[in-house]
Image 1 (cartoon, rainbow, N blue to C red):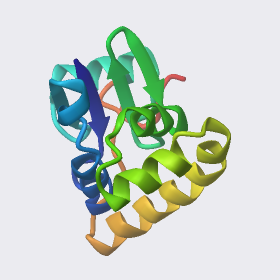
Image 2: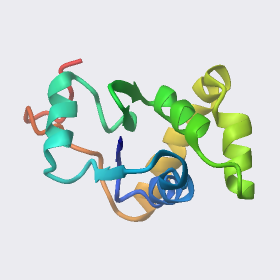
Image 3: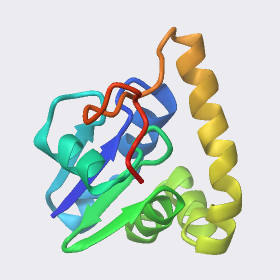
Image 4: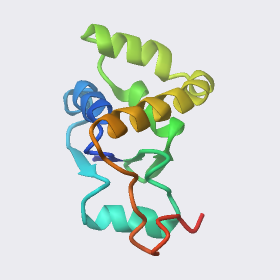
Amino acid sequence: MITIIYDGDCPLCQDYVRRLRLVEVAGEVELVNARSDHPSVFKAWQTGYDLDQGMLAVIGTNVFYGAEAVAALARLSTTNTLFNRFNHAVLSRPNLTGRLYPLLKAARRIALMLRGKGRLNNPLNSTGRPHR
């Protein structure tokens, strides 16, 4: 079982998780919008993950956050499409993903701004900032 918590209002994030095609290689995949009131979202914030700064991937008992989540998902994705071959070849390397992730986050912020969407809010406090 894989659970991915991502910004469901971000068109880039939506497209990324859809194109991974993880169901084909991993079986059951749960996609959770970080803007929802899903219990996994609350638990992630409660654990200290700032979902506005990075996606979260829970693969079995392992938890990956931000660039590590993208790298872990890239390692699992199929290689039967051009996107997935590129994703696997480039983003499955943690060092490279770590350097590219700030650019991916900036692209997300721009996409959200163009859609008129704001930041994700931490449901645990009124400032919207995580405890971590």
